[in-house]
Length: 526
Image (cartoon, rainbow, N blue to C red; front, side, top):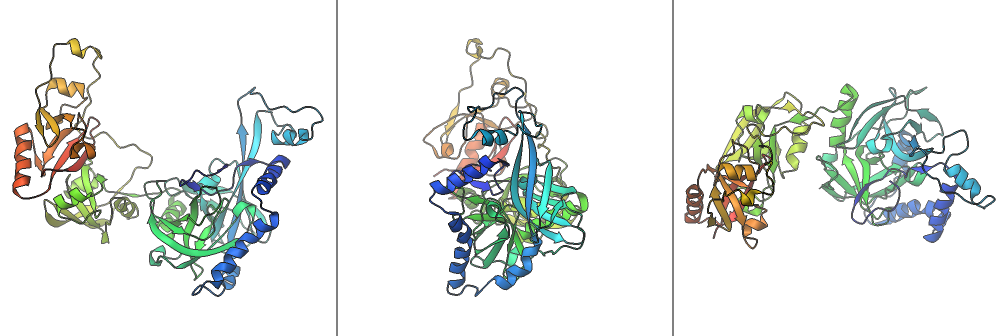
């Protein structure tokens, strides 16, 4: 990406896409001058960082023996893309004979027969060889996305053109490339990111700002970081210096094994401030193996929609806060439905692995072999039980189907005239900050609720109530109270009284909205 990174925003760290011209080089020099940086200072920064790291008490004496064995397997990746602008779009002009006339000519690619509406942009990143004989190279998807030409540059100065993109995965931002080597290439092996501990030393090698073969050292700052880039975020965080151009490069442990693929940074300036992120090797290996075998990813599928366990939900279910995943809905004929998993179940373990958070379950399921039968430990109405599930295959890039049985009626043609229709909504009854009413045909039409939706509708929500704080909205339908189905306001009141009598602080409500979405909320009752 070009331009500064917004503060606290994760950003891919590939090289900026810039026109290949003298102007681009002048701009870079101007930026360096404005920042008060000399070329010598820029070049010496990685060495200074490394020296500081090696002098830290308890740190490695030197990483030179490790780096020299690995650096030949780390590559620089340069891409070219022909960009087409709007036909006939006006271009900036400078006076004839002006000092920058030649640079503007180059910038807009008017030489060499190229159309004024076309220009060639390039970008740079990093990668590493995982199979020297077959010529297989791992990098980030965003490094090569949209490229018309991909060139791999090796540490000895040789270059190879990428013959084929074996496969790529947008959800983990990984890609597998193939070159045809004249002789076997140096390669590296994956290690286990699961064995890493916060504070372990790591080393990054890559191509920051086009400075190929750069080595930086740091530690693992954190694990299992979610930076909101995709559904399977589980990043390693490191303070090893990684910058634009490091994208797709390897993060090594002190045994010389790849334990991460450098992918993003958070920085207010666009330069390393010691907050970098890498896809952990345990996740990357699964994706790379699938791309190698099938040319695509084949992820496991359970067939449930889930939500996090809040404080109130944890109390209602008798589980620890933020532990497990609450099943809000189950796909019809999906693996979970066939195994007997129900809405309202809390999944605590899947295939022998603890589900420590809601976001952890999709990652575990996605990495499970399709067709494998696994044990799933759940909590249902306070009782623990284990069910056996045959994992299905996730259909990639397909939007979830509407919930079975939910049909949204067409909008009324008399929109805006309901006030004059003579139809009055039924009188509501207030409970725990909610004004409730039985479902009628008029209310179904007003809130676009399907005929199969059963329960009690919320007409109003007291904005100062705990229910409002938990995002209960007018138009939501209460389907269950304390995991018991309700069809009337009396059923809701009875469920709330039962919870109060039992001395519990919150009542568990299951809500359905007009889109067929299901969710659970725990609303205080005392």
